[in-house]
Length: 297
Image (tube, rainbow, N blue to C red):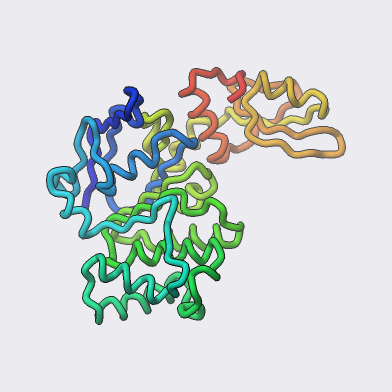
């Protein structure tokens, strides 16, 4: 099982590039596609889901070009787009039965599969409630259930935890990890903690270009020895941010504790600390944007 993205570019009207020379080889596991809003993540996912075609380059699924033969991939694809629509007057069972019919799944097999999926996403007890009464997290779980109806080999989810409360977010991350197994899962997000919790690989994208493709540990190594904490007066915070790459702040009674990514200690009274993925992400995006370590993102 292999998805190969080779030199893919996408141009929109006005000669605006959504992707430029993007290449990636994926095998079973969870890939965190991480980047800021507008980085090109959704453009890439639309190409992989055969919703749109690349302007240049090629995508192959197990050696088959998905533009020339899209059904080879569509038959094994599960897709949860960022804006997932529902029919509010239907309940979860009716909605999934409708989508199973569209996907050409036999009705008997569909009933059994729907029962399994509703149990998997913890919606069995609310299966007969209209979808209009569901919370945002419950609707997202219906979304992942519909994406899994055909037991896909490639599962794509686009910004799946936006708008979810912390408990729902944790549940969704755990579900994605459990689903990986012998399939390729692509988790597209700008939320670093989602990638940190669920992904075995990370593809960092910015301005339509691939910056990094590595493991979470590999990305952390890039900022090893470059993360510091120090405490400064609250009144100095604005100017401090203009001079340093600050990844987080904590208000304390003696001032503001800032976390800084830099090659050298930002002030004398700085302490070196172990990096987290948020530090590495900000460092890579800042570097790609042409900023030095001592400039504001």
